[in-house]
Length: 420
Image (cartoon, rainbow, N blue to C red; front, side, top):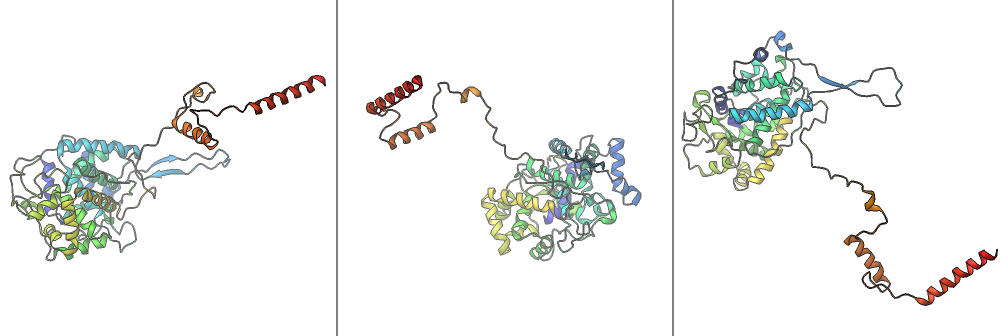
């Protein structure tokens, strides 16, 4: 994530994709409500208070035997589950017209990537808390161009006011990966937003694209977040999306055969030929290094040079399924870093595995009327018959002597009853 995913350098390039071809609802000519909301990017205390939205609460019903006159305490959630689902559908439609997959992935990563595992206090520890919406953090060098992503997200925030910024950023990031053909990411929501720019992390927590010692730099940054070598390499694979522009980051070519015609604003240099498709081509292209029109940053090339990184880079170049599996797990972990959830267990909006539908009760099926026995029942009956030397297909011969004794006994009983 050194480049597009985290560094304000290379990744800022994708901002141009959205800045020139935004739909009317997402450009600067927003509705009055959206325009005023965008002014919230300022860092003054008065403006910051406008970000504070009341939590959506639902009164929890009292137990049927509770006779207390006290009102039930409301149950509050950071984000409304139904609005999360609706926002996800709107993000899917937005992606179809703006081709903003790369910059939305980066938005979520940069909000979460400031996490410091050595700091326990929230929100000082950083992480996915929506702080990236404030101007003071947007101006960090690593976040160059992300204001364009925020312009896409703000109308959604205006429409779905009961969803936090922190959740919207991560929802957009995960949805962008999935809509680009990537793996399904096991996300949860309910992240609480910070409320003021004073709660933003200091600059310098995100990685850069071209440090003197790329491997050491990546480990220093990602280990601080609690991530390991496998997760560093897997997350780097998201560079299969996006482009870098030299006028913004100092990296890449002004234009290549893969970017001269867009989609979106033309220009820049991509890491892969199909830079809006999520697959494992990032690893295969870096390994081969045959195409001069494809970008390889120092933090990209080191994945095949460092012995520990190379194990995973080679694996992902050969096995896209393994890459997708590890990426989905790493992305979900990254999106939760530093977050405070309400409820604590989070909110899952994806439908789980379908539950078996109970068989509809039909009285006739269980009546004593004639019906065909199941094969399982036939096998049980056959086993019982065979235990005494017969089978359902060849019933046992009648024991006539026993039958006569039974008849005589019944007649004697009836005679006795009549006599009495």
